[in-house]
Length: 188
Image (cartoon, rainbow, N blue to C red; front, side, top):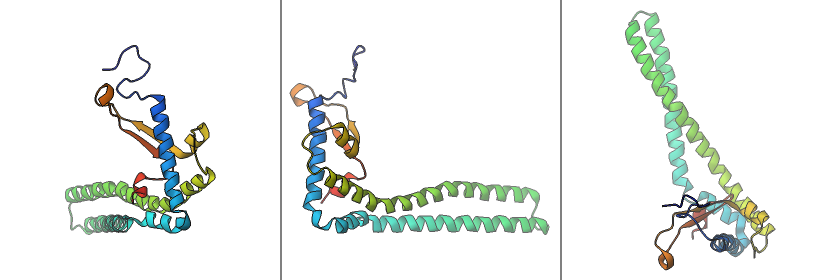
């Protein structure tokens, strides 16, 4: 339980030296990785951008095509409903029920279509982001100390989890999220 008179959250508190070391080691690890793969950065960037994306992209495209097709089908059905009412083959009550159902389905499909289109667009940015990160590493040849500039350029955020255990058995999970990249890209 946090102390009421404390200026920090005691369950998430981490010493400055520890967070400094974690962030610095994270940056240095990413730099080493990029240097090891320096000869073929563009091929590696393409490989990273494509990794696992084929199946996922196919699924996104299939879902998008299905949703767009259904949206067009609903437009045709609503149009046919109007024709049936105009011809007197459909009652006003039945028309109101069916058109409301179709329009509700269409309203749920529109945000889904927008989300799927955004996912497809995001995929195209992965390779550019990887290349941006590689350029950033080249700009800062070797980071040996943290400065406001290199923290700002490399680090998107730092997540400090609640500590577990006490004193010598105390452990705490810390995740450093880097700009432009996903950590999963760096797994061999």
